[in-house]
Image (cartoon, rainbow, N blue to C red; front, side, top):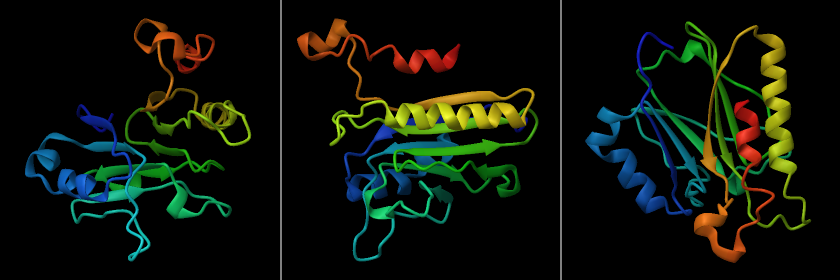
Length: 177
């Protein structure tokens, strides 16, 4: 991919704009990372945007029914990566950022925030949309690599105690098959 190894970091900022801006502004972050997959990014209400930085391109969920202030995923890609090789794959979810990098072997990069308690009780909505995106990309490309990361809010029974939803913690693994 891109003739190099991509250095990716996945992190939930817990809606902290201060922590996210500090992370973006660290020289070591820029030097040591190519892609930042952020869940629950801080939203700057006076500016009506997520934190930006001159060294990074930001991608957030897109869709006519998505209010940017409620988006729960943001992907930052270092500006050193040729923007003509990056395209955003449409999704109807405020919890998914799906990018297709098309240099060499196409690579689908998916940043997921899986809300633990959907207000309507539909815990599978984000995962169904994720499946739809993956199927569309696979239909368009004979071969595609997949980088799937995020905050799944799924707790394994070994460390989640009695609160772990045993039937759900295996759901993301099904996409790797």
